[in-house]
Length: 188
Image (cartoon, rainbow, N blue to C red; front, side):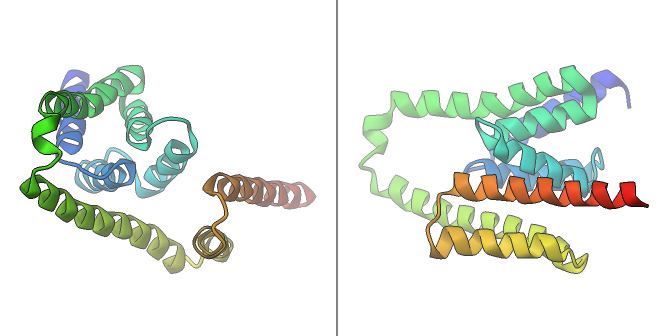
């Protein structure tokens, strides 16, 4: 595939995903995985999980961060630029239109019912992300990561620990595990 055609396909893919995705970054990341990994085979599943982790831990929108990283992985700087444009054009356009008619939408019962239905769909999609990521860990028997996932869930859901603190602890645990592996390799 020519570079120009690849960039066009990347733009159309991110534009499509961003246009028809409601519910924030994790929803678009799930659909991006299906499009970029499963359909186009531009990146593999492990790379997509790494991109998701980086996008989530970086400042800014998860969907835009993911688009930058996926676009860069596929086609370097032009890919990142094309992905960003494809990702930001739909919400920018939609929000601009909605803001012009906000007073008509805010009290409309039909709009409120539609938004409530969309919340249910978003929750289901986020649950799908969690399920597919966790399933991979269990299938590969990644005990360390399963324990981290369980502890992070308990800390945030049961003990209501701030997500930033949980993320920082996960980073420290990941660095510790990597240092342990490096230390073991040096001893061999």
